[in-house]
Image (cartoon, rainbow, N blue to C red):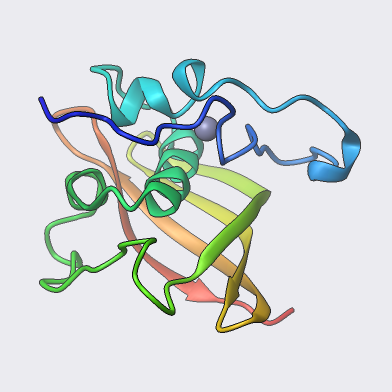
Length: 150
Ligand SMILES: [Zn+2]
């Protein structure tokens, strides 16, 4: 196992869930170790596509490429994946809000979210509806997503 440097105390995903009043609610974010850290640094498996989605957001924040690859469907995982947060010009992720978590069936789900980030001094919102599938191994994986306006 690699050394896990720079792991935060509070989870970057903020425990985002549908119906939650974003980060303005003043609710205390969950601890990283109790939230996405269980999946990224531990052996726990996300039980839902929502948990997986949150942990992938957190992996982007941390620049954890191995985790992103491990949770990406083989058919759609890009050969080139560079998410080093320390690189000049890399987006700085500011927060996550989950709009919708829809279970289609046992092995398919959709999560719609807004991830805010700052890139090159400008603030952006990534609003995406993502598709997830669950493999025979019981693991949820990200397939692809549609970028939504607004
Ligand atoms: Zn989390």
